Length: 316
Length: 189
Image (cartoon, rainbow over all chains, first blue to last red; front, side):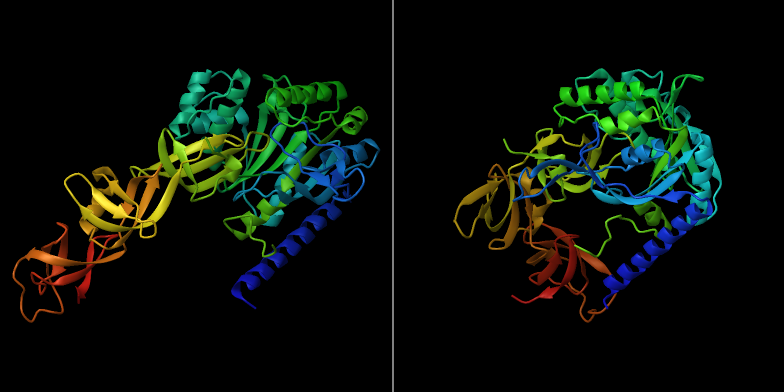
């Protein structure tokens, strides 16, 4: 056996051990494990996500509408709406074009929903989980706006576009020209987050970034206290984003409005047209109050083992 | 004009940045949770050798640079230029001072060099890793001291100056490492 394949075997054992630990964590809490289709007739409207579409050469009507799912969220919400109670799933998820040290186009997600929880209660449970899998660390919670002020020296809510550009420029990033004002602002905020904020998060602790700007709510609720913020959080460990959670929105009218906004953005920017996920929208008004989270298992294991690159599989 | 999209970025790719040809040294894909994807890229400016960092929104395109590394034989230099020949086509090109830069001290006729051509014009010249050059001028050698201690400057036939052991004499042939300009050994013709 070569050194490479021995390392490969060690990695397989670590994976098996972590998956067993995760299942144990949820069994202890009597949360039901489920499986949902990896391919559905819908892609996502999120303009920053690209889906793979399935093709079956040689078959009649081979040009199908089946898309590999970038997240099991729509399918799992349908189960919740049908009365499943709290559920979890460990599955593959697919995002075209995402390839790098911390990204794989095919990766493993742990997704779970806690009926009756809000995002604060879910953060506590996520902290329990990473404490168990990765070892004990203190937990830090910092609001999205506060993180920009503390680490980048800029208020992301009140700063002018010029100030944001200057702040992003400080870190050696050239400003990227796009026509749309809101889009440019969002792009600069993303650049500052990536280049100046993220590296400071989760160093020696588990950091929850919470209270995101309302326009980054995605599928989360928005509250108005003290200013409009999304009830959304992300977990960072060693500067790496590990998980994204929501206090789930269960208002189909508001969700449809957000999806339509994304569809319009896609159209304006020449991105592929995407149908609205009607089965998801249909179930939202019956979705019980719950909080849900998606956690990247590949990244969790990357941190546990200290490998520098996600792409370590010995299989081609 | 050919161009590359960010998803084609990889190290070694030659692209145009601010009208200068550059080579991608490192390409990192970055994407915040619900945000936009970027490519964070480190590039070497092929004209100046300087490193640049740039960030591109994923999906953007960058103009390709018509840059080619070619093995060529150094012929001779005159007042204005260093002349190189493609040994297969016998085409000759002239490289100016900016393109040759510090490599000038290591160019010996008939040596094979890597000439970087941009739109068929040389912009950089890399000599072989090791060259053999004659000592034109140095202080007299110290007899018997062949093993250790001390060094002195020696001027080579190309004008380059290297630190050499004390026993080296004028007329000696020396093997030199062109990457760090260090003496390796004496050489035979």
